[in-house]
Amino acid sequence: MQHDDVIWDIIGNKQFCSFKVKTKSQNFCRNEYNITGLCNRSSCPLANSQYATIREEKGQCFLYMKVIERAAFPAKMWEKVKLSKNYEKALEQIDENLIYWPRFIRHKCKQRFTKITQYLIRMRKLVLKRQRKLVPLSRKVERREKRKEEKALIAAQLDNAIEKELLERLKQGTYGDIYNFPVHAFDRALEQQDEESEEEEEDEEEEEEDDEDVGKSEFVAEDEVEESDLSDFEEMNKLRTSSDEEEQESSEEEEEEEMEVETKASKSKGKSPANGSAARKKRAYVEIEYEQETEPTPKSRAT
Amino acid sequence: MWSVEGGTEEFQPEQEEKMEKSEQAAAAFPPSFSVSEIKNKQRRHLMFMKFKQEKRKQKLQLKKKKKKEREALGDKAPPKEVPKTIENQRVYDETTVNPEDEEVAFDEGTDEFCSYFNGLTNPKVLITTSDRPRGRTVRFCEQLATVIPNAYVYYRRGLALKRVVPQCIARNFTYVMVVNEDRKVPNGLVLCHLPDGPTAHFKVSSVRLRKEMKRRGKEPTEHSPEVILNNFSTRLGHSIGRLFAALFPQDPQFVGRQVATFHNQRDFIFFRFHRYIFKNEKKVGIQELGPRFTLKLRSLQKGTFDSKFGEYEWVLKVSLSAVTVFFKMQEELCCLI
Image (cartoon, rainbow over all chains, first blue to last red; front, side, top):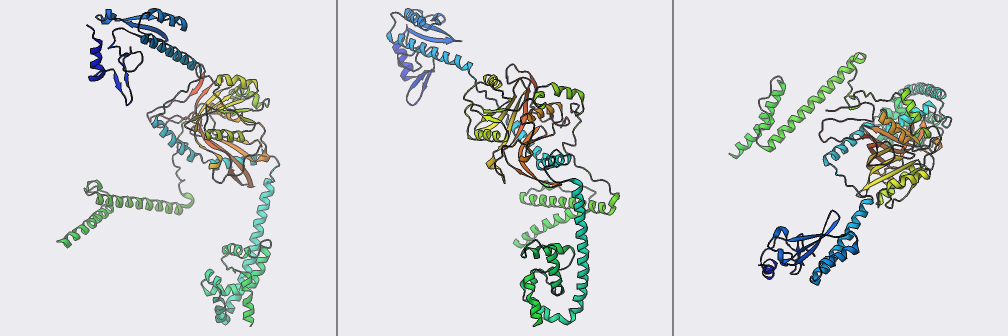
């Protein structure tokens, strides 16, 4: 015999029901025939011998009914009625089949049927719209690709490649006459410049050689005086530690001043000494730091 | 006792050192002990470091010796050995395009880009994104639009690409560029040439926007940039190269001194945008403006964008095993094992 109350007493409250899902606020029922989805006395399909549900299969809705007369035949317990695709007609069908049934079940069946039709409509609409496809990334592949990219970047040497390409295009003349770098004239100009600078160097070297001799001949006579004068200048000491060089410097002051003026007429006074020193290093001779500061020394010598 | 123990501890490393030295002196026979047999981790580590140092020293000495020999021989010295690189080891690919090939020339004369290369059409590019783009992608699109002349950025607003494409054709666009976004960062690019042209799908990585560039210059101007395409030498590479070339107008304005570079290296396409200045005949200075990104071709489709029924000309095959790697776009096919 079907004792609904007893069944509910057992599974509802006291003992275990395998379909029951407990949460903090509510209990749910996972039974597929449950009409509301909650675990209640009136919605439990196990604890009600007269029960009805709506279920959908592949877009088709069916009304399932269970009556107490068939409680002894589990295979034939649920009566399945196919509902029409038309919403109103289906509602009428539900009413027709569940006539004289409890109000609760009729109401809940219609509610459930409405919800099901709504979500079926939404599914059909979504399929027509564009859907985001999630493509799985393989971590291994991604890692490898990243490393390969880094290596390829290093192998590419982009800046060099771009510069080379641009220079080639310039050579081939794709730029026309925009840039005034005519090839032969420029080379000739370069060569001329080289010759000039070589001549200058030779001249200056000769002069310096003379100066050397001059410096050497004066070495013995003016040794003490020059050292005492020059030791005051800090810059001199920084540049050259040996006294010989200082003497050469002092003796060559005037000539070198003139030469510096000749070679670097355009640059300002402040800058020229430094550049002069850089250029002169190649010739292995000595440079004056500051023209201005070396001027007083002849005066001191005179006095 | 204590002092004796201390003594023995000091002795042992010395002994081992001596043993090492003697072993290295008599390098012919193998060492009687290996570093891995020492149980004490600290000491084992010490020994290993010493071993490494010795090796390094030997290597340096060998190098110095070789260098001396080279200098001593002078002109008669054997030529310097070139290190092996991937680029050196490539197997020659038959699909490399020979610039004078008639077949290729004929193909190019009649393919989808012929109207562009004959000067009939001017490029007009539509740049858009996937749905709901985030800040970085939006900024990337804007910067792309400044780099590519005659480019328009439009918001996507959930339109289907299949419907966008006919509209673009109707309005005389020649290109549609769709920047795909994932987690607020652009990661894909679909480049579709319009009147039924090929569609290329790229994977985008390492996007650097303008403000993240070091020592960048002022904004790119409106002048049409020059285009440099490096290393697109196989058939596939050639078609991709033409795809990129057709993005920019045919006549670059040299006054603007801007150049856009697509450099293909091992199937990665690096995009850079520079401003150049010729200091003299042999020197050019370049300053990077503009965004930079790298592309990797994932698939090439014959017609316009159609993911279901399109005819794929080439699809990237990813193999999880590390056995074979093929570079399809560059000069030679390379097979690394």
